[in-house]
Length: 164
Image 1 (tube, one colour):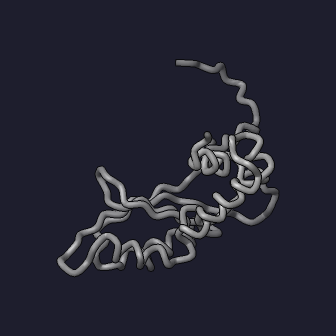
Image 2 (cartoon, one colour):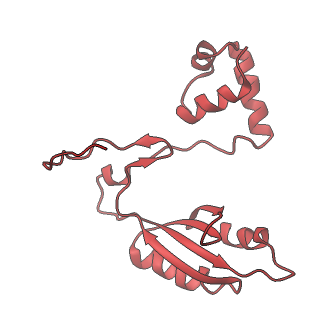
């Protein structure tokens, strides 16, 4: 018998698989697949479905700027990481927010229509939060892989390739 986790793996691979497709790829019937997906959605395990977009391939005059921001925080007795994350996650510019281990506390991803907009968002909305002691912004220049999907349709490079 297939594990229910296999349904999640298939949806992460391609959220457009039909219940018929997933039944064919697992030991579940179509109705069992639909029931499992409904249970996952009701339990909040599946939070939504999104398209993976290669913004560089979109032909448009509009710019789309993304950045990763390292955030350091100092907690006091009344404030927790959850309190800070609740405040930051409410901003529409924030696409991802993670508590991480290492040299900084939060990994924040933001999007805006220009570098100026992203810069102002960080300096005007994020940096002034009292518990935040430092921000380091890294603008994303090129994406080669997003959410498991490779963007391999770039122009060929004339340089010789070197393999490890």
